[in-house]
Image (cartoon, rainbow, N blue to C red; front, top):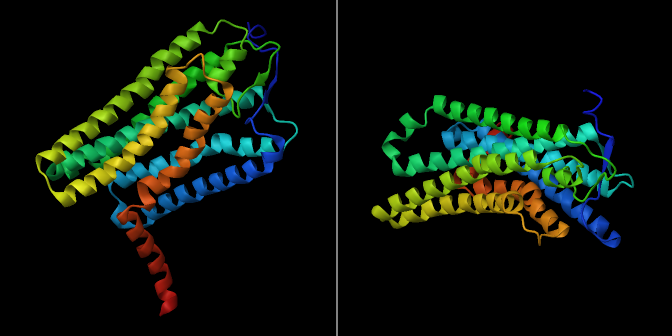
Length: 314
């Protein structure tokens, strides 16, 4: 049984991005800058939230975990992409491919659940401000985080084990820049109907339901705001919700469109661009959209660095 479960091929060839050779160095520099920006931006957020007591609130607790997830999510694919852009031998081992797929699914799912937790936090803060502290207790926050990790582990492991049972025969060329689940299914010479069914069912549970919960939460927030009109309150609430919904739309829109609503007209180039949006662009933009334009984060930035400079100024 063990012998029959082994794949015939031992490695895959990643075709990478459809970039002309004369533009390779330009795009390499661009993607390197985007990756460095992602790492530094998310590390800065985690650093500020850890050091500034004013940010030790449920909202920033989830935000720090989102930054950690974004940092890891980007690191699953970007280092390999950058390496392959400078390499003449862009291969990845079979085990390495499954490992990359597992962590890709894990951190993508974790981001999805953290966005739900942040939406719920904003819903409670705006709709039930007097009960906010009681509802969003440290115990609840930790429970939501632990539940997110458990569910993401189960989902990522399920797809990885289902993929490991498939056989890959002659074709080992992945028309993508990472080991994407749908790209691997196209290469398999086994029956993939079970995998496709699980993708559809679990995708609805992991992606569509959280997306609907987020939209419902923000609809309730808008409804609550409009009941008690206040120019300042409306501006602040819509500023926060608008920022969150920008990231939610960018992340869920591309993921749902790519995996749950695939089109026969989708070209490899189109699918690659859509994947770049949520694997590279979204983790880079999150620090700017969520935090670095936020007054609390700017205040924390000033307090942390001013406190470090004060002893020397004396």
